[in-house]
Length: 553
Ligand code: GLC
Image (cartoon, rainbow, N blue to C red; front, top):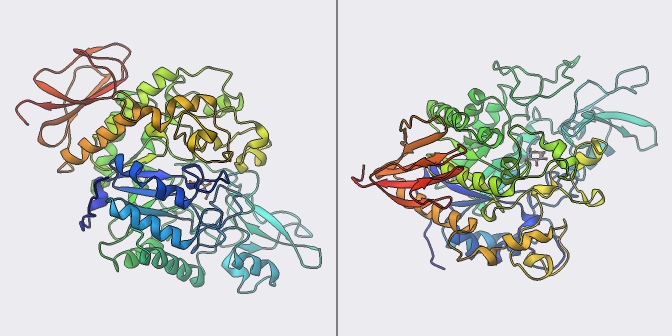
């Protein structure tokens, strides 16, 4: 494997390709069926073959796994089932040696209920400094038997859980916007603020290059009492004024301005990306240069495979990012969403939850169409200026696993919604590395989530070196992208066909996508650089092609 030097460019992240690793499902090195840090290190050559700029690791910290690791018991350690800090250091060194930078996931809104601070809070008196690190309140009603407000949890039903006092009597309530095992921190408390600065320094000192900030828009709440009512959460419906009781409050930006000072202590400065489910106009505020620098733009992930929808999203997001001096990000899949191969194989706008609940039997997915569209959308995305976030397994064309037996589901969403929502396990099934063998080469033991038999066809060893495979398409497109892009410029070319999107990038590089149902003629006077499907004189339906104009313009 050729070594690639990390460039010292402080702007490396503006047009990067970043690959999300969900550590428990990437590769297992010790046979316990859970992916681990050494497993990642053992696949550095694979990651390098993808031509990535960085990887982002979902949480690998000590955790009871009440929410797939997003319930962190110790922010400055590695879960012993996943390895040690030494393993982590070795992984970072091995990735850096092949020119791949490392992001870690920071979960600042809530900890695990097993965090020492929460345990201390439970053992302490109401009103004590230990309780003030979280959000404890007396209940309403005559005996405090009602929750302090009507706020719901993202994982349903209430965002409040009542504690039990050491003598067995019912106690105060505490706030958790997610599962009860994820108590929310009180970000008005300077000790909480200070502790996260320590965590950011801890990982930056270990060579971590960037941070993905979990639910970045939720940290500051309006805790003045009586609490304002908010019986429902609707993503993207928070007021543009920044005055919602729970989300996207203006004060949250003070936190990130403080974090930026830490990032800038390092060379090159550490970088970050916000996960903020807010409207596009507000999302870019998190990406300001004196804050996190980038924010996930989930618009393509939420969109149907539709040319005009894609065009509007692309144009608006590039323009909006520019207003704040940032570059846009692009995402088609992640560990929280139904894999896009599956989504594109169902009718546009189809209710994915309903489909999952039926184990995928109420409507069959057109896998061929889904995969063709996923490949086309990916090539289009990789031709755009900005940073692309790729989710492990999408380079293999993996689909959502809808038929995980109910007794093996791990996502808290399943139980908390009384079995009416299957949750997110279907996109978290361990990767197939080999067509043969236990767990398709993921582990020498049983994988922690069951892999379907058809994963064999998608295995890395089946696709490697096979010219038309999805894996080789990713490798090739990522390599070309790195070679071809020299600026953040792009411009649309009018096609006269509402189903066809055509734009140019640097040095005559062009991308054309046919979202329609029938083939269209290929533009003349170009050489073909790469394509997402078989192109023979015409551009078939659901296909993207990259061209270079013969004049080099
Ligand atoms: C983010 C994560 C998700 C997690 C939640 C709570 O949305 O992506 O996986 O459940 O935050 O931490």
